[in-house]
Amino acid sequence: MIAVSEILEKQVLSRQDIIRLLSITDKGDQELLIKKAYSIKESTIGRKVYLRGLIEFSNYCRKDCYYCGIRSGNNKVTRYSLSDEEILRVVELAQKKQLTGIVLQSGELNSEDFIKRITALITKIKSATDPEFRITLSLGEQSLETYQRWFNAGAQRYLLRIETSSEELYRKIHPDNELHSFNVRLRCLEYIQKAGYMAGTGVMIGLPFQTIENLADDLLFIKERDFDMVGMGPYLEHADTPLYNHKDLLMPVTERFNLSIRMIAVLRIMMPDINIASTTALQSIVPSGREAGLKAGANVVMPNLTPLKYRRSYLLYDNKPCIDKEADDCLECLERRIKMIGEEIAYNDYGDSIHFINRILIK
Ligand code: 5AD
Ligand code: FES
Image (cartoon, rainbow, N blue to C red; front, side, top):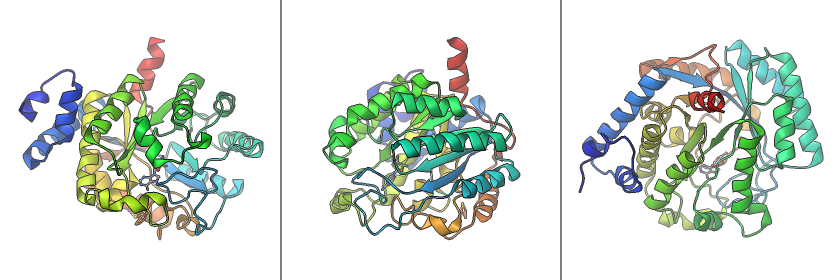
């Protein structure tokens, strides 16, 4: 078998190489992989971490994904939606804390009312912030026209995870109907790129039925489709979801954690100039999980700024961290943690994906 150190010398990783790196079991080999990924991150981006304030502004959702705690079929969830005023207060806090952008996330809705509301909200946020303030949307599948409308209103970035690039696996983790179509998902990702956004995607790691080959193909998918940003994290079960029935198939959480860290590291090696988020799901397995993600090549963290009273209603999975914390506490805690690993928060830096900037320049 080819040595990990030898693979890490290569300029381009083959599918076989990726599979080999994701399958590492030796601690020393994992260390080598992480070191290599971090050195690439350090030389392309620096010892910097970009922060985006996350606002989970509503948990109403028309979808029924088998893994997600806020799926429409879960009637144990108290549904909520923040008012524009509440959202604007969070935006104000983000600016006071020198954050250069926010992420608006919610369950998926696509009514005309919702589309109009978001358009108006983007306009309001734009007029309450400096012109460069970045708005990232994470609002699911929409029509090209809607993506375009929100882009024209002033949103610059969009996140839509493919969840898995295997159509077969996609079908296993979603209901079999038009609302949950793999091809629509793919098309939406194309629309997002076409509309001009800095485009982000990602996958869940350690899903039931998922193989290492699936994950290698996920990384190749992300590279082939030229995404600018990626957020990936371990799959974590939620007791009130259908996928919970398959929890016996899951690998132990620590393995899911380590595999997620290797996914981040391999992706950084494959795509040196993109933005990679170190996700909250990592933090739910290990309290210092996000720091571990940063040490493996991630460069973005999204502190949760959702007002405390709503946090318990946005549980995508069990054991979500920080559900009893106000935004201020999370920010302070994060600052401390980032300093501890010798990295620095890039305040007042928009932290656009270098990959995106290069892509635009080439066009
Ligand atoms: N475990 C991990 N991640 C999840 N997400 C949703 N449910 C879960 C879960 N049970 C992720 C999905 C989605 C993002 C907002 O949260 O990848 O795109
Ligand atoms: Fe919430 Fe540390 S990030 S308390």
